[in-house]
Length: 260
Ligand SMILES: Cc1cc2nc3c(=O)[nH]c(=O)nc-3n(C[C@H](O)[C@H](O)[C@H](O)COP(=O)(O)OP(=O)(O)OC[C@H]3O[C@@H](n4cnc5c(N)ncnc54)[C@H](O)[C@@H]3O)c2cc1C
Image (cartoon, rainbow, N blue to C red; front, side, top):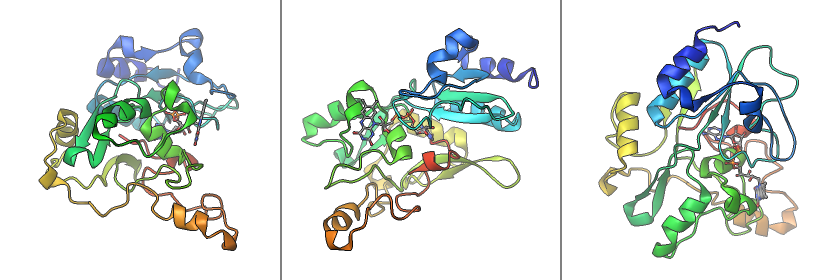
């Protein structure tokens, strides 16, 4: 095996029970919902953001292909490996054990860890008389909020458009090949190091006074006017490749930035 100690390091980070290997045990996670099936060295299930960060670092340092996976309901094979392979080992990181949701400012906004589902969000918002931005067919089978953002899911909701946000925390590999944490969350005083930031987010005690990006879009505000301007005969999601692509939004098109 080209990366003999990688699996050992990953097991040390998340515990052996959260590292799936072998054809049979990984088969479900290596396959797409409707199509797609490829190989992977392992499927990892981090239970904290810090674990996820460490796993990413090991994978980047080992030169692995990283595939982020939510509920795996995507229909474009984005959350499973390709049949042809990549010439280097594939690690699938499944986020479904990171399900925390935190209401911000009394429910005006929400902070979602990557495995939190639309169904969870619906339940959390119902008592407040609010509903998630995305109400999609796969809400009932566990689709995650972040998987939707990555895919720009939704789209058929004329008043709301595709899932989109400019507020997120994500990992990026820089030109020198090093993993960097990019903070576009718009929350003050989270801390300086990844460790401090993750600890604060997972604790979930975010003061309304620390929310500094109230005007930054967390949805596609231009969708409805674009759709209703039918005389222009444009398709709001398809005509402009960069439309709705910003940090974590539409990242599934590029498959490059794991959202934490
Ligand atoms: C029955 C059914 C009904 C559906 N209805 C709709 C619908 O009405 N509208 C619609 O738009 N779609 C629909 N879909 C498609 C799909 O459910 C959505 O695209 C959904 O938002 C995907 O969420 P997921 O958690 O399953 O993501 P996954 O399939 O796990 O991942 C989707 C993409 O996001 C990436 N990703 C996931 N997590 C992260 C992360 N943390 N960081 C970076 N990238 C990440 C993955 O790599 C992948 O490319 C439907 C699918 C099914 C099976």
